[in-house]
Length: 98
Image (cartoon, rainbow, N blue to C red; front, side, top):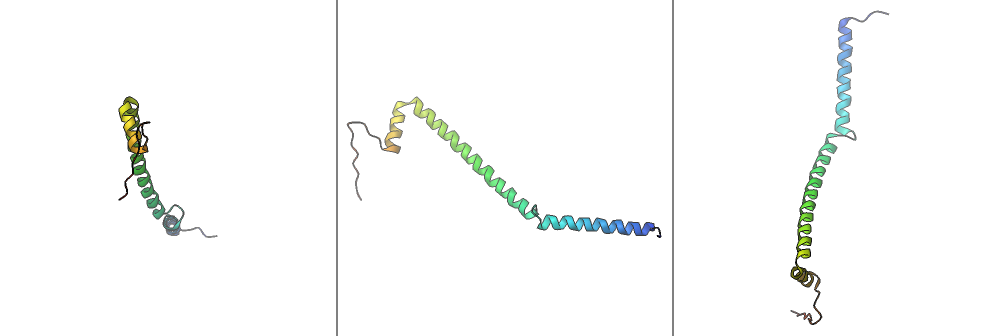
């Protein structure tokens, strides 16, 4: 068997490098972990982070509301009356039709 020349070895190495690059590119473009999937996941992560931030803000507001209700009987009565239509024993609710 003849020995390969330096030129042939370089040619084979170049071919292997290009082949490996092509396989990687095809995998990136069409595989399960494609670039499109990456960007979709990135966008989904942004939306989830925004949702978490909104829920944390809402949670803080609710905690403040709870503290306000706990600290003020008159405010607690107002919330019961306004949100849940709870009345005192001597009160009656009158509904008007339009």
